[in-house]
Length: 343
Image 1: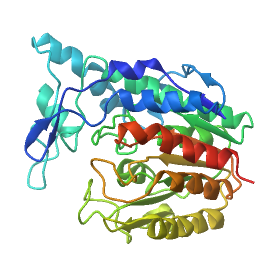
Image 2: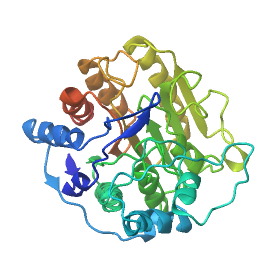
Image 3: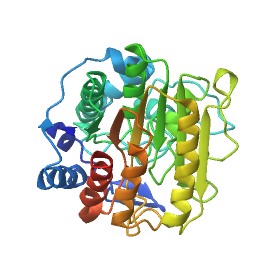
């Protein structure tokens, strides 16, 4: 299986994020991707390739132009003010405030953010842009006929909506790849999000559409980030009604509960009969993940990959979350090996 990877992810290294009323070191750090790459190489999963550059157009197919302009230029505006710390929002357009786009840097940042967990640094735009190219390069491998490919993206993407960053995410790599499949002639794409946290950005991008089926297994939003999306009654709207399926699970859920939800999601995917499958591959479902509360163990990820393989679809894996750094490589590659060697 081909792995696509870019060293540009090191350009994004936030100093802090806002958690529980404190500015704390970011759980989303460069060593996450480094550990996964090392495991890919250790296990001889397959070749590792740098991404091609497909430009901005495939990203524009998913993300709002004004949002991209803001994100690309935000750090320069911050530096022009003589600042060198992380750029983080401190005001958001809440329910009782007008939804207008301010002209000030901090006002715009608040408008285009939904939390304080997506710091912008000097290299964040380039890292996120390169992560999108990683996803597009792996997508092109599937388009050329590969059974599977792995996009080792960092920063992750599934919390990013068309004009919104948050949850460590800036550009939605899985959505960009899914749209590229459609633009290149496929009629139906399915996305299976196995990250502990609901892929609110991906859901919102495709919620009104029937050409992308979105399924997600995640911590229940009554208690888990991102809180405001991910309930089981969110089934899509308009043309997209019946093409969105959420499987929220209680804290402490282990493989028995999680795999039952996976079977339901796979059932929906089989009924949908997509041309291709995109996996938002988060492994923060691991029992020792510091910011998540499921109880999957490393061997469970092999079984996860095997079940995905039985869907029998060309499959693009896009790296999302996972913050138990020592184990993230083992768990992510276990999914890929389970898929690759499934009988």
